[in-house]
Image (cartoon, rainbow, N blue to C red; front, side, top):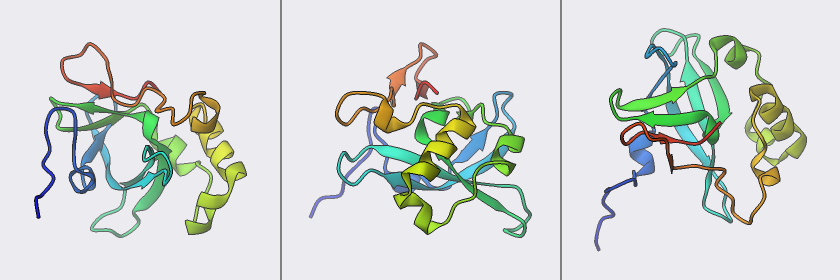
Length: 142
């Protein structure tokens, strides 16, 4: 059986997990822990980001809309405009939150993004993977 390989603009999800996340100034603010993927469309909707703490103690874990990230080839990681204060004040979540559209609405409102179900077009990616004109950076247009 063949193995899927990466190439071009594609990346394996196991290579996204553990990737560093930076603020716009290039300071590391956390890592991608895992992704939440729409079962029907196959589109990534959220990245669960970990931040803070030391050796896993006091570490926070928060979902952010996937559109909040862009990949920066120079940093080898994702950049977001989300602040630490926004992360700390974000709506709390649990595994049960994923079935709660009201919670998702509050999350998108908190981060100032349009919910994916309001973007129009079946399976709309909301600009995920669009070119930004900055080399090979990928942005989601948050």
